[in-house]
Image (cartoon, rainbow, N blue to C red; front, side):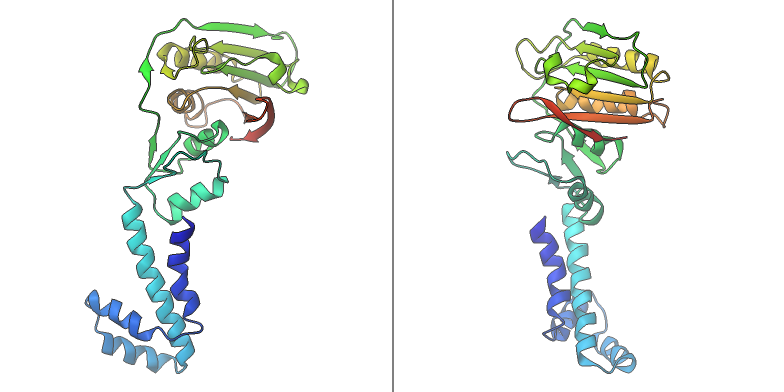
Length: 262
């Protein structure tokens, strides 16, 4: 992405120091514009070669920008095997400015997956396709539900177990619902429709009772997409005023930092 941004901006920047009229006119002639007439109009308005060069540099940058956005339309952002924990604005620029049409949620932190899904950053979302649909038995455990609070903890256990010790101490006494997909025993990625249904049942039942929802999850991309779409992205009818998704540290797997996604 940095290379593309540099490529787009380079002509506009270099035009301050080097005349780019001939290059710009060459590009304009390729698209059928009368270069001679364009040059006459430009010089009749502006009688400064440096300013004319800057205008030509901007014209070149615009053509490069149009070319790149058309090329990116069918491209997938964040390919490769890296862990893609870019700032949210990077994803926004990739989609809204550079025109990338797809993003993969694989190897993206869960809180970022929620943000990308909730804010419709990319036209198309790609999830892990190496997932088998299995109807595991769902386990639901409720704790401290009698405790008066404006906050509710939702612990979604999927590919890995989550224990009380992994949740921040200041949150452990809050009303908490543990929902297990039944997949955490073998740590493999699978899709369980019953897991999604149970998450939806619980969030629908409790969304009007609590202002803030704290999410602690080890869910795979397939589950995350459907949880967001079916439970939280429903025309502002979630009931929860705020949703905070906690991200587990990669060193000790403690959920020590929360990110506001709604």
